[in-house]
Structure formats: C-alpha cells, structure tokens
Length: 247
Image 1 (spheres, rainbow, N blue to C red):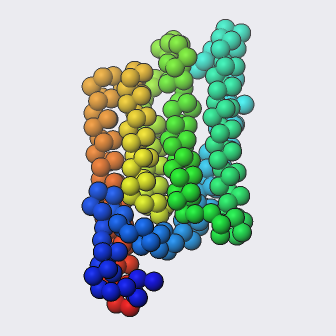
Image 2 (image 1 turned 180 degrees about the vertical axis):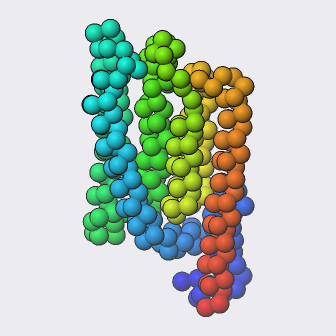
Image 3 (image 1 turned 120 degrees about the vertical axis):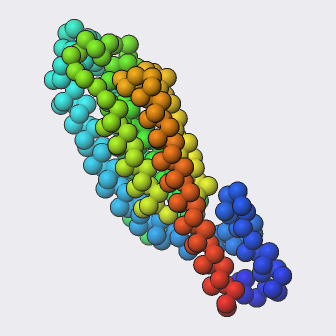
C-alpha cells in the first residue's frame, strides 16, 4: 500500500518514465494495470464481435465470391486460385483461433481472474496485427501481385482507398476503444506502417508518387493517434498519482 510509505518513497514509487510512461516502481505499475484490467476485458469482449464479423466476411469471400469472380480468371485458366484460397483460409483460421482464445479468457470469470493484464495486452496486440495484415490478403490487386498475376489483364481499375480507409478505421478504433498502454500500442502502429511499406514495395496501383503521398499521410495519422493515446494515458496516470497522494 503506497499510502503507508514515507513521502519520499511514495514520490519515488509514483515517478514516471518519460519514454514509456510506465511507473518506475513495478508495484505501482501493477496497481495501474489492475485498475484498467476490467475495462480491458469489456473492450476485448466487444472487439471479438467485430472480429467475428470480419472472419465471416472473409470466409464468404474465399468460399463463395472469389471462385466466381473474374478478377483471378476462371479456375481452369488459373489453377493457382486454389493456392490463394488455401493461404487465405490459413489466415482466417489464425484469426479464428486467436478470437476463440480471447473469448475463452474474457467470458470465463475464473480464467480472467488468474490471467495477468500484461497477457491480455499481448493477446490484443497479436490480434490487432493479424487484423491489420488480413485486408492486404483480401485486396484483389495485391493478392494478384503477390501471386505473380498481372492485375491489368483483369480489366478492373484498382485503388488503395478501400485498404487505407479500413486501416484508418482499425487504427482509430484500437486507439479509442482499447485501454492498452501506449508503449504496447506502438507495436501495432509500427505494424500499420510496415504493412503499407509492403504495399509500396509490391507495387501500389496508385503509382509511385501517389503511394508515397499516401505513406506520408499515413505516417501523419499514426503520429497524431500515438500522441493522442500518450496524452490520454498520461492524464490517467497523473489522476492515479493525485488520488494516491490525497490518501
């Protein structure tokens, strides 16, 4: 109990690290995590419904839409369609496994009581990274590029707008809805950046100049979201410090 410590020791226990915003005292950091554990559990539970919707949409696309679509050509002309479907099914299976694991943790009071908040954070980060990677393998243009096909021959026009909008929704919702610590969320932010750099390396349909501008705008969104997340967490930690100092 920090209230039983002398004033000098109490101030040391509530000292923050400037780089990570973590309390330098492990006990104080654990106390902060215990305060947000229940909010994190509820947020993860709500997130799983969104993930399940994405998974069902992905399965529908793989099993029913893509085989009948002319984007990849008819199956007799391009036998590699089955390989694409297999790889997409593996990605969806990984998302389903993580979703099932998360639901088993947050729905069971006994498991939730035993698990540490740090583990919940790590599982959330892994799930978010999988969600960020999934749209890249659902986008017809990049799937064709990855598997050595020429998207121009399909006769369709392509754009990164849908992919970037979906990533923006994931970025914004993860920063607003999930009470994950700022230094853990930076892993997800770097993964967002890595994914669009991958698109840039594969060869974006937007061209070099437009895709470079998209990359700059995405970096700006990442920085602003990260600074906002850091500022909110800083307020939360200071509010906890004031509460403890008044006791």
